[in-house]
Image (cartoon, rainbow, N blue to C red):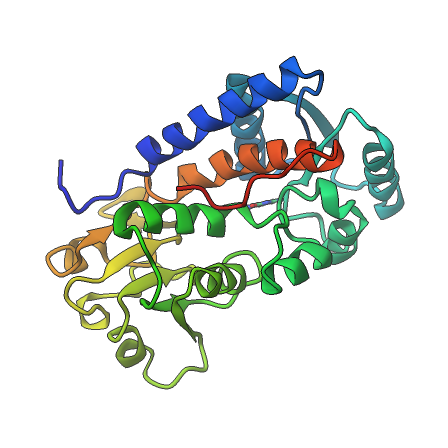
Amino acid sequence: MNAKRIDGVAAATRVLQTVRQDVAELTQSGVQPCLAVVLVGDDPASHVYVRNKVQRAAEVGIRSLEHRLPTDIDARELLSLINTLNADPTVHGILVQMPLPPQIDEASVIQAIRPEKDVDGFHRENVGGLVLGQNVLTPCTPTGCLYLLEQVLGELSGKHAVVIGRSNIVGKPVASLLLQAHCSVTLVHSRSKDAAALCRQADIVIAAVGRPRMVNAEWIKPGAVVIDVGINRIEENGRSRLVGDVDYDAVLPQVSAITPVPGGVGPMTIAFLMRNTVRAARLQNSLPVQPAAIR
Ligand code: GUN
């Protein structure tokens, strides 16, 4: 085993162990955390994601409800289901699996979810709360990235982090979390001038652009820690395989630590979804809510 390789499966297992204890405690006090997952249509990847979420929930003692709706559903029917779930006091988390079919506006669906049940952390109120440094539900993948960084580096204060990509689900929230952890943060994107030179200044690199192996050795300062959020399917030597946004083999000699793809950031997303479900259940029952990040 390479000592530089950050094991996301092992890290997710540790997080899930603490979640299992939290769930047991809450359940004993009369509140069993419950996650409702809504799946619209028949996208095969979404089906796999939803199955994994439901399975992981069962493993930690979280009750889950699965709502499957046809592709051609009317937006009003979906919003009506969300309203029902919003009003149900036994449901603590609502996750609508993205992407949604083109006739449905994703933004209005996200806004329809009660912020206290928004376990994705995508609602405007939670996005705003994150930027203000409040203890809100934060997006799962970015929170998982912070967890891995803290495991590897301990204190993040004063580090220079470069985030490649400015998406609403990874780039922007992970930049906010890094700032809250007292990093200096640079966001690099498609209009940046000399992205490689900016990235070469980083103690921490978070790559989240969705471009296979875009980040090569020339982008990386010796000793940097690299978190690769990309999951790209490519054809290589006649075979289909998953690769990240970082050319893992090329940068490995230079980094102090790096997440592989698969087996790095991926498993963290579900682990922090489970943690957010527990936090949501506490929030809705006026119990103290543990902070988004854990050490
Ligand atoms: N589709 C792919 N990733 C995600 C995610 O994190 N949350 C939701 N709701 N849908 C997704």
